[in-house]
Length: 132
Length: 92
Image (cartoon, rainbow over the protein chains, first blue to last red):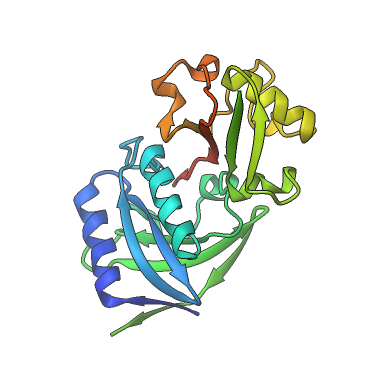
């Protein structure tokens, strides 16, 4: 079970909506099963079907997360697809220690957020609980 | 020149779990060669067969992406810090 506050969830949804028509991405620091801080980032590819988190932003965020002793969560949005890892998401998931969060705006009024572990191309879902 | 190398978590399996190592070299390319000498096999996780950085890998020199510098031919100085970090990417 991974818990996310309503405040962080709303920030993620707002970030994804602002990025339309392109996919949004960011980092979600986590600790002991809870989301600690959301780092909205830039999608270097600026594409509705692909994302790459801006490397400089990634590097700076990694530094802060490591300093605080937090763990990594990686978030991106799907503009029209379901909130589950695509084949590409699985193939280039280079961080087995990260919780991958996918937000679908397929129904823009009712965004869906799901979490997954992706390790050596094996996907395992993690239940997400919205708190507050 | 002795340079500190920050190794992102996914690559630490190649460095015996070490997240920070030191290497000698005058350029980033020489630094990677030095890493290969110490950790055989690591070069293949950084460079392709043509000696270019793999597409989903980012390398920073003192927090600046080397693509904004001279790439692997960027000169390094004593005390510089190099970070080798796989990209965060995907799609649908």
